[in-house]
Each structure stands twice: as structure tokens, then as C-alpha cells.
Length: 91
Image (cartoon, rainbow, N blue to C red; front, side, top):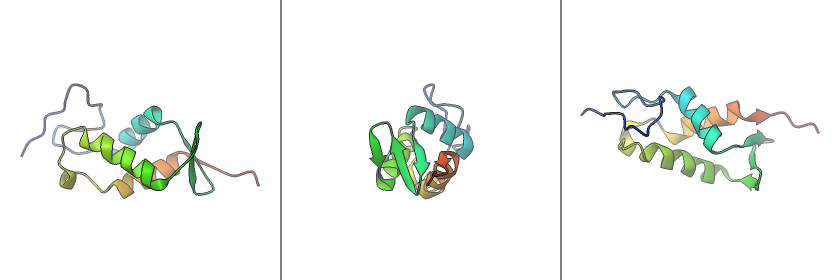
């Protein structure tokens, strides 16, 4: 089964349907600005649950047209987003 990159899909999706998680994370956090503080995601609108962030990641992956079983688990990308957006608490 081959996957062609859609014209509206960013560079994080390779020609064979392989996801570059670092590039995905960068684009995801540009589209969904947030910080990760004290094990909580915070947006300008307030706290957002891990389930909500996971759903946003899943939705972004599904829009590429890759079947659910062809991409790495959302949990792996969620951990990367947590690391990339982590801010140390000043308490």
C-alpha cells in the first residue's frame, strides 16, 4: 500500500506514510500553542486535558489519510509534545 503526500500535508509525513514525529510536534504546537507545566497542558484559554490534546493529535494524523493502524501511537507523540512544551514551575 502506498501513500502519497497530500498537497496540504506538511513535511512531517514522508512518502511512504512514515511520520517524522519531531516535525509533526513542531507543526502541532504551532497550530495549538500551549505550555506543559506541572504535568498539565495550559493554553491561553486555560488548562486542557491530556485526553483533549491526544484527540487533537489523533485528528491531525487522521486528516492525512493514513489509516489509524499505520501511524505510531498518539501516546508517543503526546510524550514528545510534553517534552517540547515543558516549562519549569517557579514554585
